[in-house]
Length: 345
Image 1: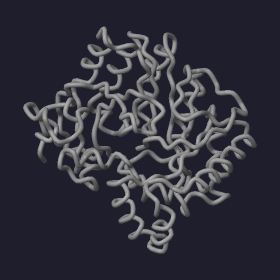
Image 2 (image 1 turned 90 degrees about the vertical axis):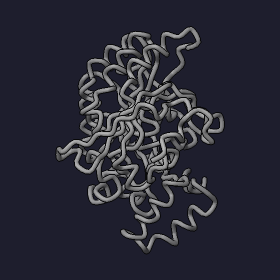
Image 3 (image 1 turned 180 degrees about the vertical axis):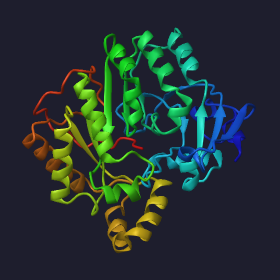
Image 4 (image 1 turned 180 degrees about the horizontal axis):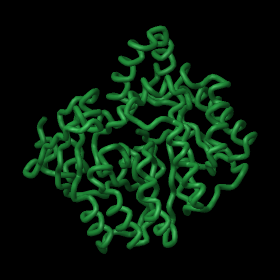
């Protein structure tokens, strides 16, 4: 690993150069079942509020990411490419070499207090999951949420992690003073598929239990049905089963997102596909021949099917990435928007 890749003057982006330097990196391993085989690189970040590049498709401008790398080990994760900036492997290295920004809560509090900060919406969980297993040990999110609450700064969280329930009281407190949006990612309910494509993430049913628990406490929670994986989770019966489970869990809305394969993720996913579903390799090469995204006709077809099912089961779509005050349910039958490809973990 070359930590100097993120030093000032690096050939990489200014945003990366501002994150941290090589002078204070502590590497740790923990001999416990949940962390066996995982290496943590503790760093002191220089900046924690990051601007999304202008060319991005993301429907937000600012993010906070207390971790790099993710033990969810989702084979399709777009953020794998970011590990190459550290000369870390974007395959198994992304799953097992986790960068922890240990000073994230205090740094965020200082940045929110700056006169230059205008209180814009901050999105979390859009690069890697802020509630991955590492959060159980490092506990960075309570301090982050407290800072956002104390500054009444609007924010949203996207997660596959059940640890978000640990911070339920903080989320409710924040929702009393600012807009809070919570989304859980559940792309499918097929447990056999989950075990191979998202091997380190909580099972889909456990994620839906998060939605149920939040709803029981009056906290509105959206579900990003992401990713819908072509030829593996996009059959009519599969889509129906997933939307039905999401509706039963009490989600305020469901937004489908079709799998996208950017460089870094594409190579790792296609390797996985060749090992588990070799008969699909040629079909994927054709479907994604034009780039990282599936064709518009395919995206629209999936979006239409899911939105029709959502209306049937009494929940409405919502514009992806739009924050909503926690506890405020989404409007039923909201207008159908074009599919938006968000960053998922």
